[in-house]
Amino acid sequence: RRMYPSIADPMNSKSYQTSEDFLKKCSVSQFDSDKNSYLVITNTSDNLCQFVMYNASRSFDKSEVCRYSADGKSLSTKSLTNSYRRYNLQPGETIIVTLYR
Image 1 (cartoon, rainbow, N blue to C red):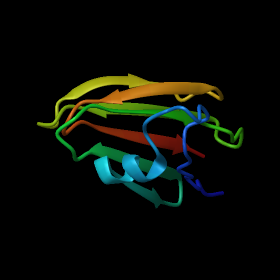
Image 2 (cartoon, rainbow, N blue to C red):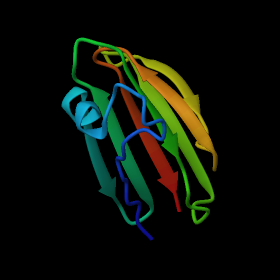
Image 3 (cartoon, rainbow, N blue to C red):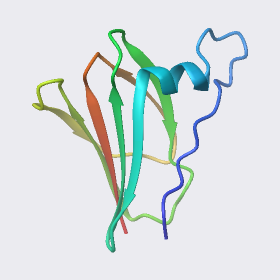
């Protein structure tokens, strides 16, 4: 099984940010290995970047979201739940989502 990220416009049509704006501010990469899938999101802009992530799949037993500062220091680690979760990335910050199979 693989992870297939999809970047969509906000559910609120009055939002000033679009998926195109998000992709201008953030670098998004997805990788698969035999055992895991990874999603890497880095704020490459000089401004705060906000987004919502939703894990619609129940095919992964365990997952985690690790957040790193611009200089690579670990800031936090949380589970990715099957619900919506808002993220705020400061300039240079990265999150790595690991989905264990």
